[in-house]
Image (tube, rainbow, N blue to C red):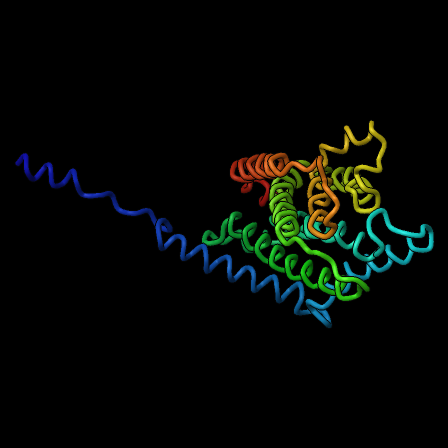
Length: 276
């Protein structure tokens, strides 16, 4: 009898439904289906589809370049307005194109999240993966087009460029996840965040370099993670430029803290948010 008891004690408990390899496979299929659905709804209904994802930010860079070339003789760095604004706008645009869609995940996918097989994690992962891949493609094409227009070749350092792009994507995920929870819980948060971040374009180093800002303002804007990301991006395109203020650990810290808070809040309140 003792041997029978020992055998029964060694029998592992049955696996929970949706766990292990089967659970990972289910999540992969669900996320893939959500990505395909969003690709069809966002890019499949408009003429040109993905072409507009490139033309819109590229048009913004060209517009800024022409406007500032009429006001000043040369950009703050180098001789090309296109390259200067492009290296600032590309990571900023990637961050915005990830954080904004992720922050509206529950609103966009509320009908699908009523099915038990689809979770809020699936929906956020799908939006993050799609917008990150799209953003990487758009960033590469825009920078390639800008470099092709230059009269003189540049010494491109790929490592800082890829690091800044990756940091922009991680920051977009963290801020987007936190805002997704706050927008669902606090009715006025989306309007407040829109007003709060409206000057972000001007205070992130896209138009004016961090070094060219007043000292007092530098001490405040150092805490803007986009300042670090954009400064490091320009290190990859301007060999003589050194962004001494750049701190990858700070950007990663802000990204992970916001992602952690967003994940905790969504895990606790996602059902309540969906029923509102």
